[in-house]
Picture 1 (cartoon, rainbow, N blue to C red):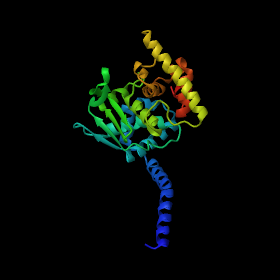
Picture 2: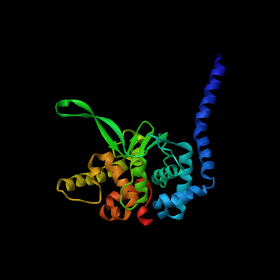
Picture 3: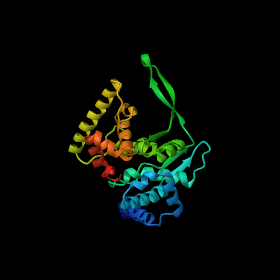
Picture 4: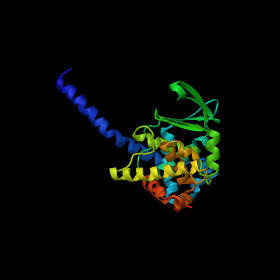
Length: 273
């Protein structure tokens, strides 16, 4: 092939790559600008009472994000589950709540959400005494995979959506993991702006994580669920659930923690209630 033609093809390919984000943005704007379907409104009111807490401007933004999410992400039923609009709208609403503030894309690595009727079983390698490795089976309500998938149990999704004041929401939990995984393996430190942001985040999170483990060691209960003491990644997901579901209590009991989450999500849900 002549050199001039090769060079021209390279330029065309480069132009296509450069135009790709612009094309995506225009496509998303068209989708977000469509009227929100009336049946979806009824599902949102009935299934996701947490959405009614949002200020009017945020409710409109949530609906726009949901339309893009549902246009781009496949929601697939597993183990015989038939995916209905109730399932799709409920999951999309809760998954898009963490995106209402900062502009960070719509889970760019995520391709599909697998939904099971109830708890699903996964196998995980564990190292036992003496260094022997074996597979351990666990029943889960949700899991976020870095390989472009989130797995959810619909019964837990529905329960969490219906009880927005209990601080437990499997969709918010797993999609917090997705945010955490956007810059590598989940480690409790999602993508932040500056080195100073990371230092402050690390200090606050470590102090709160250590305090939680200390309370549990003393047999004391508290606002933050014990599962948050598993590791820093689970801690971030657990406190994200509280941030959206019990923000006033989190702000009152853990102001520094609430401040970091508010800065990261660019939201102040304590002011919504």
